[in-house]
Image (cartoon, rainbow, N blue to C red; front, side, top):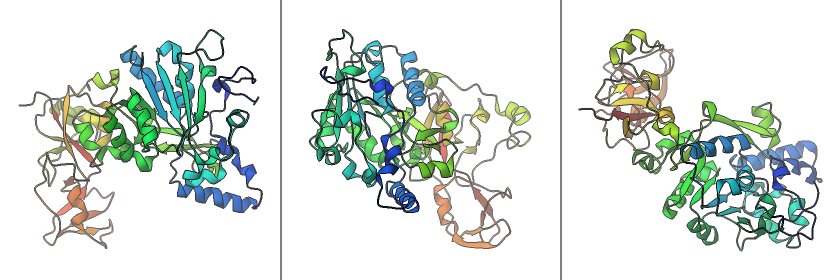
Length: 433
């Protein structure tokens, strides 16, 4: 890589477009000179665990697919907007590179990207500044570790080449470490119209709260389990947040600075596969307005491709006044009552077709109260031996009076058997009488 300083003609320039897609930390192994290979491996894995595997780098294709969904629905969605990207290492972030590359054709007003100081998180031990930073006159060997950085791209031709592009980015150190909750970054949030990034999964609920307080539009990545968090689900229920176009199969590969973690889980070098990931947003897109094509209850019972429904129909829950529908494409089109569906239903939810009433687990089912408790039940293995656990943990689940022979079940002294479904959303057809 040639040395470069963005926005300064006196130094040989390079484009962010040509920077690697993976994090610079994937090359940090060479800096651990005082340890053996095995010790270095152990330290990297310990750092990964300490960071709670939060440091994932989103692929260009995933950013592009999601943003294109918003543009296809509203071509002017980014026009005259200030976009904030609170992310690690903005000079390596695909979010930064994507929006910088499309700055002019999207009609952006301003692009701001921030980073988090290496000394403020466990993996910072392995941080190494890039030539992009060290060859700039502003480089400070102390600040590079203790301060975050801010990149700004505006409608200003900084290098007099008569175009506004990624070579016109300007950067400087932040006053603080770049924590998104700091006053400094919060002020940038308040300036922004749209916030988009891949925040640490462990801080997801705090990040959402921070965005909501600022009132900005957003598109962020999180784990699908966040859908039923007690402080996230109400936002979904109130249509203040919904799922984006999403990842194919609800899974994707992220760039990871912890190559040993990637090697243990996937064969792609420097990448790690993460299942159950979603885009969470309040920006509208076309998929959100595509109603499910559904069959009637009678036709599902006769023709459904799912053996759990075909020839059987629908089971009622033992503790909720609702029916169990384990697959979104098996929802009956003519049922007016309450329906329990998997949380993956939200990938196909059209708010004009179904209303969301509640959810099991984490206290999110106030609108659909359960009418039975299971404190006198005990958990059994499939071989009939007790696990030693009571049935109290089923009180946040939707339960069916059955034993499918595939997983543990619960039983009371009267011989009543139940099994818990996975997390469920409760929905009802719009216009149901």
